Amino acid sequence: MHQLLAHLATWPEDGRFQSHTYQKIGGGANNILYKVSGKDGDLAVKFTLRDGRRRAWREFQALTALQAHGLAIAPEPILFDETSYPQPVVVQTWLDGEVTAVPPQTDAEWQPLVAHYATLSKITPQNTTVQLETAVINFNSVANGVLQIERQRAAVPLDEQPEPLKKLVEIAHNLPRDLPPTISSLGRNDANTLNFIRQPGMWASVDWENSGWGDPAFEVVDMMTHPQFMTVPPERWDWVVALYAELCGEETAVTRIQAYYPLMLIWWVARLSRALYEIPRGKDKRLAPRDPNWQQQGEQKLATYIQRAFSVIGDR
Image (cartoon, rainbow, N blue to C red; front, side, top):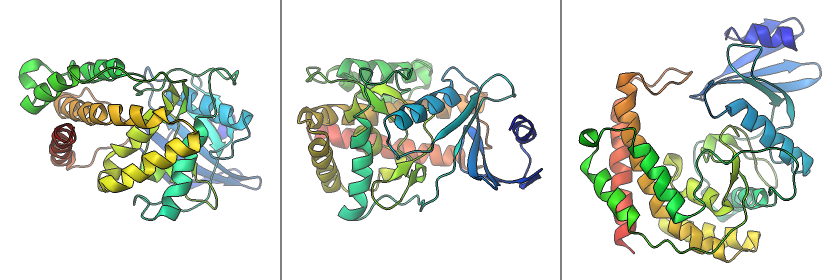
């Protein structure tokens, strides 16, 4: 395994190493992923960006916790190493199944996705010995949500901030802050549709490098505000939120989701504003090359989130 990983750490194109074949899989911005095939089956070898998140460690720990609970909704962890190669690496089993960027379209498609999220709420700090950190992004209160918005905003000089961002942050500071308490549980913290493997029964998911403890209700908000879910109609989200609360057996989840939703839209406005400021200045590192049209795409996304945030807040 070490020799294979040392070879893949040079990021070769598709090829063969001893008794294994490997295929470079595109799509990730902050990792280099290979599908490795051999006589004992297929593996996913993922080299991650080296930063303060400890992405490979987070992914390995989350997969270990899921395995310990007997939840077959993610790959099985095989190996983790963040010191032997230029980039940290996590090795896991390869999951086969349908993958598409298109969000679910029918009740039958939404059911296994919502059930996947509801199942994660079963893993709590009280019932696992696996060490996990707080999720990279997770609101466990309105005050915490405002704090995380301000952290994104602080990376952009005041005179470079879009005026709508300034107004939205002001609104965020004045939103009601009383919420029912919750118990932390494991969250994925990445709702990208391409990370879900559509299998019979409950869907599985990959790419757990942002995972950790947090309010489980936030996971639904993360999905509701993800760029790939922005075309989902509001009435579908009402259905999703009700089903999630039913599956979790937690009525207060609805209240928390409703409170976090506008905050996360504002967070996206702050995050996109930060990206548009930092990328031209070389401050937003990633492993994969950017789309040549990244700036136009970013500006379009920013305009969409500004409109959605003001619309949601205005409906209240």
